[in-house]
Length: 476
Image (cartoon, rainbow, N blue to C red; front, side):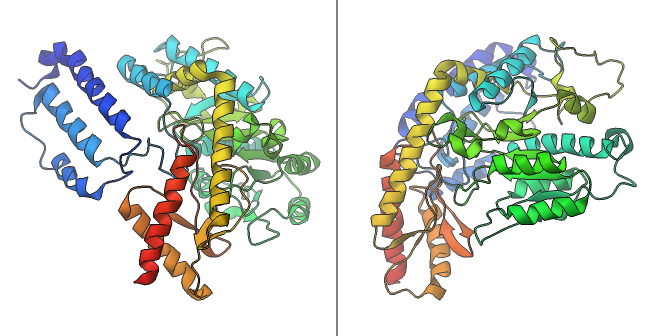
């Protein structure tokens, strides 16, 4: 019989299988390749037709563990430098298991007072961590992209109200395009959020004073004056290619002067607030109207974790609440229904791993981790500058190091192609993971050091492998 009811006594045994596999897997992350393509054949075991009779609880879990520990990209290890991805601290990983064990619906207080209270607590702790005012509203989201949707939906609600329209009730019909201004550092996820909200991804205008995308404040000032009405400014803290940041304080001044909404994208850069060495990069963030960041980056909690903070909490409720469904109970100040404050209705209790990690390590532990990563990135930058065949393309400001492979004798016009092939070779090799991007028109590597396991030894390994593969490509 395949009905899970008849295997209910095996639920704890299935979790035991995962726990037994966890120790050797985690112990091996230090030396394990980030991705071993020789193991990709295991992926075939995930396919085939839907079984008529299943393998049973233990059989199905055993197969998933075997395939997963073999064929996964081991991004939780210390040498995954691609895509600005963190890991999961020991406490966060355990907290995530607790979230799965309890399987709470975190949308309604009635469904889970535990999940709702935990979310309220961690949002307060995060505001303390980043220096945001306690009065800001907030909600946890699956990602920074959804956090952008949340913050910019509140901006859209605010903007439409200034045109006399409740956009949540009536929609955008009849309204002019919402003016959105940013620098060239703006991330694609901001445009995607505008696309989702019906505002149009291409309506965002950028103002750049150089080929790195740094903001042209005078040009934006003039455009805001010309717009002559409510507008939205997007400030970016921690650009993904070189770690550059907009001057938040000066953009806050612009927003105040023109009566504009200031939205801050701090996906990973918001964590600059934790170190005295980098806190200046987020000076003025407390003056923003909405602020977003990712948890599964520098907070080092499992995937599907972001957060959005909004100065006026009522705008969250206006943008996402008031469904009028009779079976849904209303929340209040103590009993918060987080499904009224964000995109999701049914929601996982993603506050639990965040709570576990913040409770385990506190402000001091997270400051120490951020400062260690700043040191690791600076060390990588120094290695690049000393290497005769590498070229640093931007100052190291946060946890991102932007450079390219530039061996002697290779002409400029061939460097982009060489670096693109080297990026492909590095990922195929799998010992370390770091892809390429375009920075100031040049094909470049932009590894990020923000996994809690990463040390200087790991970036030394990155340089060693990259130069080894580069030498082989250059010879051939």
